[in-house]
Length: 112
Image (cartoon, helix red, strand yellow):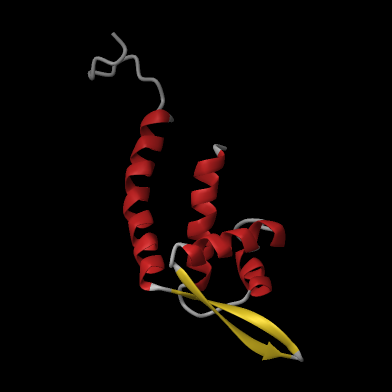
């Protein structure tokens, strides 16, 4: 898979993982596990990138004597998810076109 495409998809997956409630790294990984396998070494650079892009904010809270970073989606992050949903409709149409079965009786002129 194209690295840029995968990078964009992972960004959206992380935003989706925190869209309903604030979360922290280990929980994000755990919540994503049924859908995709992501490691800490992949997740934390994504979280930093999304924070720099103002798509999420971070706050630290003490938990069991250690600071735990909680991530919160911002309006820009919510808009990115909305844009992705709209883009996905177009991506699905392109996928359906690319993977369609060849039809020798196709009247579109593509096979002439």
